[in-house]
Image 1: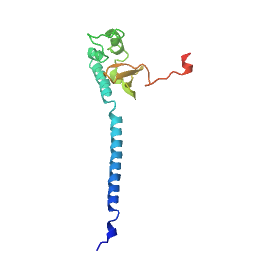
Image 2 (image 1 turned 90 degrees about the vertical axis):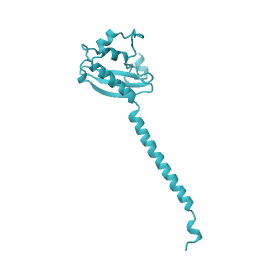
Image 3 (image 1 turned 135 degrees about the vertical axis):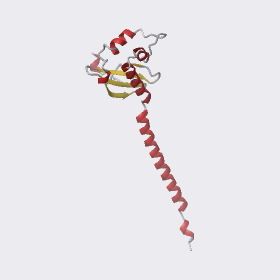
Image 4 (image 1 turned 180 degrees about the vertical axis):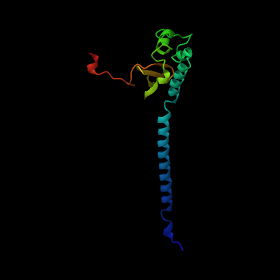
Length: 152
């Protein structure tokens, strides 16, 4: 026969088990969510770089040029199609796309810097997160800071 005190604290132990399970579940969810975010945070920008390289491989230079935000209705006066062809066309230093390798990538607040390594040099591309347009990265790092010695 069970006594009166056998059930004492059973509800507290049950509540504590439930709380521990919830905390462990939240911790696992946070770790998995953080890992998935870290893995896929640049998914759209990576796709833009891959699409740009594929368009260049397929020699679709007009479509690749349009990825820079330059169209017939909205031309880019500071980067005309002739300059684009000199940089990326069949006679450029970057025409050997089969030898190109994707280098380091930096995830910035407003975009992604992707390094393209070619046999002769490297190019840093900028993919803008807001409108997914491409351009040359103004810097090799996300937030450059000028030092006092570099201002001279």
